[in-house]
Image 1: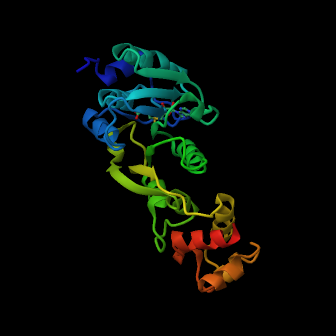
Image 2: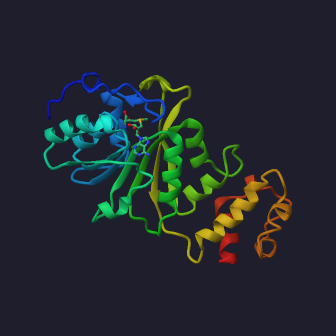
Length: 271
Ligand code: SAM
């Protein structure tokens, strides 16, 4: 066991008052952090990309689980605290100061890293969409991401759920997505207004003969007018109404009732 000073002491010593602008809500509970670090599976000697390590609570848990961590953090104030942590795990923590939205992360790795992050939800959602839109199989092994509960529900939703939409289809058409654990707002310092959840996503075989841009054209049109019948909302997508007929999908249905598999089948017809 590596002996480290208490996280709250590190935060105080480095003056890491939580910045609202950077969406900083820190986790200090070692047991909770260890449970999150256990979500990706066995991490001994595995490469992990952590986005937004902040003062390094989750980073500690990942290192303690045996991972080799590359951490991208935008807040310069956090870098000395992270470097201190790196000194306790020689050669196992690489700290990169920068904006994760601007960094070419795949180029940092020879193999496929697990990605782990507790990020402000707008940054997290933008990164998630990029990761899910990668060439398949993607350059990452799994995603373990903290989101506000409402966003987590949108990622794992099934057809018929209120939260079902484009994000669920993007996350599920060639991956499995599940909520690994709910996280109470009181676990964070300072506590955010809403509850959170950790989502775990693992890539799967991509359906044969389906182009992502076609799938997105169909789901974009269908959910752009989600209360309308498909015969109305898909009018502007060339070939889509004919595809519904060929596949026996009732054009009087609304997007929110159509399964991921059926959207994939429509997109395949257009691909
Ligand atoms: N992982 C730490 C924890 O769990 O206690 C901190 C979580 S805090 C919610 C989000 C972290 O992401 C902050 O440290 C913030 O500075 C960082 N961050 C925000 N936007 C970022 C970006 N675009 N690129 C990299 N890091 C970012």
